[in-house]
Image 1 (cartoon, rainbow, N blue to C red):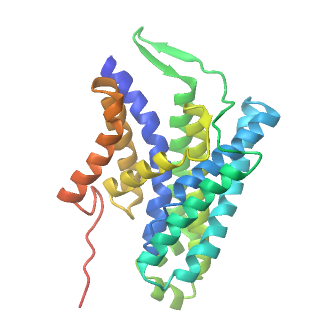
Image 2: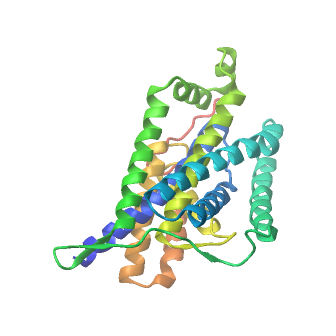
Length: 296
């Protein structure tokens, strides 16, 4: 029963990591860019939900509005960041984009710290009342965990539908395969990349609201560690692979909760980043990633 309990906890945490990792892997698959500001989009979404829930309340209507507002706001942030920071550097060396991504992350974190209505101090997130459901006497699952798992699964299914069965999704796959050829075929590469950033930011916003609901505290640096772990999940599953990002998120979440439950919570971060090192040594392309052949 203890193993099953930790498995449920791991799936709940892994669902959040998977949502955030999808943003990393989509942006990399389209533009070969590691957007290290992605974790801070999570923070923006969590704060947007914080203010909505503070004004309306944490009931079902408040939670629904919190998700909608945070998703719309973060989609705007994602499009703006791509347009102002990354698009001018698209033809520059990748190191320039990487440094810019780190700079954007620092701007978002420290910008939030100096804003008077946010500030540097942590705040309690107004999540719904926690109700623990006992299953079989020894197994317990909370309503928050059920919400996290179900909403994450629905969002992943929606993303899969968008990418595989819509015109915009087909354009995304075309740009990912060959940007120059897609442009010659009449696909607007700029619009596709902007849409990809918006879609990834929407998932990060949802992940931020769910993460703040599961761990009810918000602060300007809250997106740093989940963002890094989601990046580890994306690399673990195979950066650029959407099924790989989902798989990597669940594996990382389960590994982290099992470490906390059976070893020590102090080793959870070390295990997470240790997994990244092992994967890079054994299979650098990740579990579901494919090696690219470069023709000379």
